[in-house]
Image 1 (cartoon, helix red, strand yellow):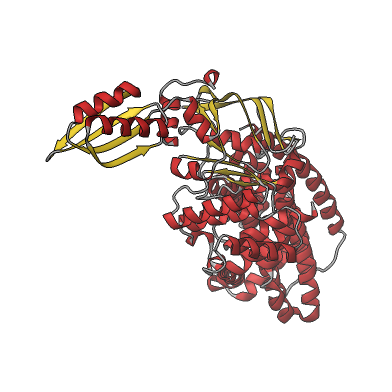
Image 2 (image 1 turned 180 degrees about the vertical axis):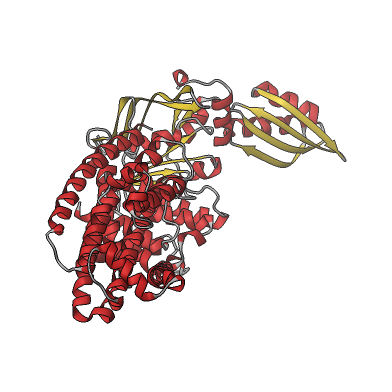
Length: 272
Length: 331
């Protein structure tokens, strides 16, 4: 297992070096989005009115810095959900259906081990790389407390992305090995926004259709958002314990599911 | 039980045709053959004959429906891990690598998957890239998508050699290569066999196979229809030799005399300015034909200008086997 993990880490680092410009774009866009969350509605009213509304929404008195910190952290979860779901699904599909590196992998190891490690390690490595833009901004806004906040947020995002990685393989394995679908991104492009919308990130969750809320509830993202809001507005809280329990539940569930599916995929691939 | 041993291996696929219709395709229908250690065994056959399926089974990438196959004494089904440790595989030289990684990075990744440490993987990748001539071309630093087909084939061979395997399974390793690259690959394969490695190679280039293979199996419609050394195969098939002679004068008499001593067929005679070009086919060997030609020349007092005796090629044998209904029972 360790050698497969090392190989995947090596490949990810090589990819990161090659795709650094893509990451730069993924750092710039959320910054614009987070500024938009606070300042775009302010063009229709005033910054004070926006901050007042946000204070009511989150149930805590806040200033402009806190409001912007919440908006910034919000972009982190958007980034992580979109990136993890898309990346895990598309990478597995591309590896086996387009580049056909399947034989290189199967010559060296079992599909079960490879898929499980890939689903865990890729989000583990990519999440910090994709959300590192938050660190200097939070440090600037809140000083050393802001950096501590970043570390806690990062840990939560990394754990969430690992569960999402396993979750995404549940869709990726049937798509890659059991169907003749040729455009997996259509599924990923629906799934990621559905999870985010169902969590209530774009509009208040009470206004979100039940179907989307149900999709979101199959992931830890709603719980992650709750935790992130609390941390951004109030600091450390008991809500972290609930989050931990939810995360543990989903991790166990999806590791089991993903393992069963990849085992069936391995049998199918080796039987031809 | 060294080398490769395949006994009565069968493999069927279910091929989907349309939305619901399925068709069972019998890729292998009881294939048996063996390749000794240190031998270059060629597996020949038309497209769809089952060559790649057999290579994939030996590479543990596919499970056979029935039958057994051993690589260096290890069962490819129950001892797949051991088999993977001692084989190097080339399958479809045009793909099989990460397109955005360089050739070097692809090899390091593969070596690490195989259990090499980072530094050993880098060293080994450099060694094999040098061996196939990609290091010198600075190609190791280019992304795989920028590789030409020849470079991709070399990289596939480098990957197969990465773990220093004792058995190489090469599925059409020179497909699409330019003359120079193909020659380099042939020389490399020959050198590897001299080091004692067992090599199973498939291909369609008969000239190439005849040059490097020490034994051959011809597979057709999922069955081995002939096997042996290239020379055995040609002899067993009773293929005719092509003889071309140019003589001055008395061609008819000359031919009559030859046909008295050796059996000839498909005779073509072309007359041009007193010189006759005679082409015929004979089953007899070189010495026997030469002797009768010389005897005939002496008797009719003709003068020979040119004499060519062509051995049947592997291509002739292959065509005779594949299109002529020759079956394994004959061999």
